[in-house]
Image (tube, rainbow, N blue to C red; front, side, top):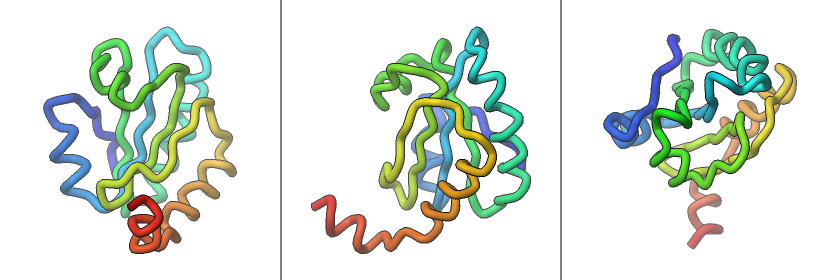
Length: 116
Protein backbone atom coordinates (compact mmCIF):
# COMPACT_ATOMS: atom_id res chain seq x y z
CA UNK A 1 0.00 0.00 0.00
CA UNK A 2 1.22 3.50 -0.75
CA UNK A 3 2.17 5.79 2.10
CA UNK A 4 -0.46 8.50 2.72
CA UNK A 5 0.46 12.14 3.23
CA UNK A 6 -1.31 13.21 6.42
CA UNK A 7 -2.49 16.82 6.74
CA UNK A 8 -4.81 18.75 9.02
CA UNK A 9 -7.39 18.46 6.22
CA UNK A 10 -7.42 14.65 5.98
CA UNK A 11 -6.26 13.64 9.48
CA UNK A 12 -9.70 12.84 10.94
CA UNK A 13 -10.82 10.92 7.85
CA UNK A 14 -7.66 8.80 7.78
CA UNK A 15 -7.65 8.06 11.52
CA UNK A 16 -11.36 7.37 11.92
CA UNK A 17 -11.65 5.50 8.64
CA UNK A 18 -8.93 2.96 9.43
CA UNK A 19 -8.27 0.55 12.28
CA UNK A 20 -4.53 1.19 12.67
CA UNK A 21 -2.45 4.11 11.42
CA UNK A 22 1.33 4.41 11.80
CA UNK A 23 2.48 8.01 11.48
CA UNK A 24 6.01 9.11 10.61
CA UNK A 25 6.68 12.75 11.54
CA UNK A 26 9.59 13.94 9.37
CA UNK A 27 11.21 16.91 7.61
CA UNK A 28 13.14 17.13 4.35
CA UNK A 29 16.30 18.48 6.07
CA UNK A 30 16.44 15.65 8.64
CA UNK A 31 19.15 13.05 7.99
CA UNK A 32 17.73 10.35 10.29
CA UNK A 33 14.30 10.90 8.65
CA UNK A 34 15.84 10.16 5.26
CA UNK A 35 17.44 6.99 6.65
CA UNK A 36 14.15 5.82 8.20
CA UNK A 37 11.99 6.53 5.12
CA UNK A 38 12.94 3.34 3.17
CA UNK A 39 12.35 1.18 6.28
CA UNK A 40 8.91 2.77 6.78
CA UNK A 41 8.04 2.44 3.06
CA UNK A 42 9.10 -1.23 2.95
CA UNK A 43 6.99 -2.02 6.03
CA UNK A 44 3.99 -0.40 4.34
CA UNK A 45 4.28 -2.98 1.57
CA UNK A 46 4.33 -5.88 4.05
CA UNK A 47 1.51 -4.76 6.34
CA UNK A 48 -1.46 -3.82 4.20
CA UNK A 49 -3.83 -3.99 7.19
CA UNK A 50 -2.14 -0.84 8.56
CA UNK A 51 -2.25 2.62 7.04
CA UNK A 52 1.22 4.15 6.86
CA UNK A 53 1.12 7.95 6.90
CA UNK A 54 3.73 10.68 6.85
CA UNK A 55 3.49 14.16 8.33
CA UNK A 56 5.86 16.79 6.96
CA UNK A 57 6.46 18.73 10.18
CA UNK A 58 7.46 21.86 8.26
CA UNK A 59 4.23 21.97 6.24
CA UNK A 60 1.96 20.59 8.98
CA UNK A 61 3.17 22.41 12.07
CA UNK A 62 -0.28 22.29 13.67
CA UNK A 63 -0.33 18.47 13.52
CA UNK A 64 3.22 18.23 14.84
CA UNK A 65 2.27 20.55 17.71
CA UNK A 66 -0.88 18.52 18.48
CA UNK A 67 1.32 15.44 18.92
CA UNK A 68 3.91 17.48 20.86
CA UNK A 69 6.65 16.41 18.43
CA UNK A 70 9.92 17.79 19.77
CA UNK A 71 12.36 15.67 17.80
CA UNK A 72 12.21 13.99 14.43
CA UNK A 73 11.71 11.47 13.17
CA UNK A 74 8.91 10.61 15.57
CA UNK A 75 6.77 7.53 15.05
CA UNK A 76 3.22 7.31 16.38
CA UNK A 77 0.72 4.45 16.29
CA UNK A 78 -3.00 5.12 16.44
CA UNK A 79 -5.32 2.15 16.83
CA UNK A 80 -9.10 2.52 16.81
CA UNK A 81 -8.63 6.27 17.27
CA UNK A 82 -6.41 5.88 20.36
CA UNK A 83 -2.75 6.92 20.41
CA UNK A 84 -1.08 3.74 21.66
CA UNK A 85 2.59 4.53 20.93
CA UNK A 86 4.80 7.52 20.27
CA UNK A 87 8.58 7.68 20.24
CA UNK A 88 11.25 9.86 18.70
CA UNK A 89 14.10 8.31 16.75
CA UNK A 90 14.55 6.25 13.62
CA UNK A 91 13.78 2.60 14.24
CA UNK A 92 15.72 -0.17 12.55
CA UNK A 93 13.64 -2.60 10.49
CA UNK A 94 13.50 -5.32 13.17
CA UNK A 95 12.36 -2.86 15.86
CA UNK A 96 9.64 -1.51 13.56
CA UNK A 97 8.44 -5.06 12.84
CA UNK A 98 8.32 -5.81 16.58
CA UNK A 99 6.36 -2.61 17.21
CA UNK A 100 3.85 -3.49 14.47
CA UNK A 101 3.36 -6.91 16.06
CA UNK A 102 2.79 -5.39 19.49
CA UNK A 103 0.32 -2.80 18.18
CA UNK A 104 -1.56 -5.52 16.28
CA UNK A 105 -1.74 -7.71 19.43
CA UNK A 106 -3.12 -5.01 21.74
CA UNK A 107 -6.40 -5.74 23.50
CA UNK A 108 -8.11 -2.43 22.78
CA UNK A 109 -10.84 -3.00 25.39
CA UNK A 110 -8.10 -3.26 27.99
CA UNK A 111 -6.33 -0.18 26.59
CA UNK A 112 -9.54 1.87 26.78
CA UNK A 113 -10.31 0.62 30.32
CA UNK A 114 -6.79 1.51 31.46
CA UNK A 115 -7.06 4.99 29.91
CA UNK A 116 -10.36 5.80 31.62
